[in-house]
Amino acid sequence: MSCLGSVMVDLSDKLENPGESYSFAGHIDAASYSVGDKDLALPHGASFDVVFTNAGDGILVTGMVRAEVTGACDRCLEPASFEVAGEIEEYYLFEEPEDPEDYEDGFELIGHDRVVDLGDAISDAVVMDTPFVVLCREDCRGLCPTCGANLNEGDCGCADAAQEAWVASDENPFAALKNLKLD
Image 1 (tube, rainbow, N blue to C red):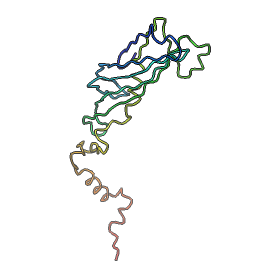
Image 2 (tube, rainbow, N blue to C red; image 1 turned 120 degrees about the horizontal axis):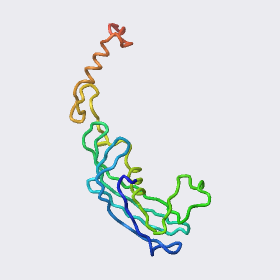
Image 3 (tube, helix red, strand yellow; image 1 turned 135 degrees about the vertical axis):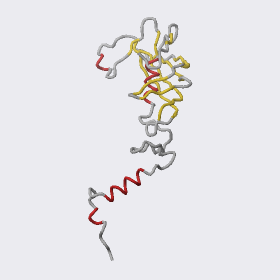
Image 4 (tube, rainbow, N blue to C red; image 1 turned 90 degrees about the vertical axis):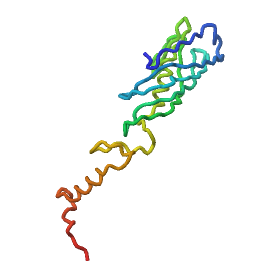
């Protein structure tokens, strides 16, 4: 099942001959989707524009999906937003192939009703264009691992205090040099 929902396209009476094309555009009013453990919102849904082409033994679908996405920054947990512009490419066969192993990634069949569900192809394109690390801004400094302060709002001082404590500790391999006097 598609994470953005179904997009049923009726191709009956269309693309009867090899080489023929049919353009189709639309909008999905999906509110959100998940990638791994991240839940991301689509405040305005997703828009897509595709071209169906009869390739002789099946239908090739190519196009783009675009969406504005919001979620939590992976470093500071503040709101983050980014644009998705994913490429859609899917191939739907008219008949099951004689040797299915020729299709390493599997294949989809077009039923006799000639209705195609683009939902999975659109969802795949959105997920593939979602960045692995979502940031509120490129130079996000994140949260302090000691006190949890948002370092984008200012320095909390924990890093300086930790460095001073380490320099003064006996666990510091250079502690023996602290009393060394160089003339």
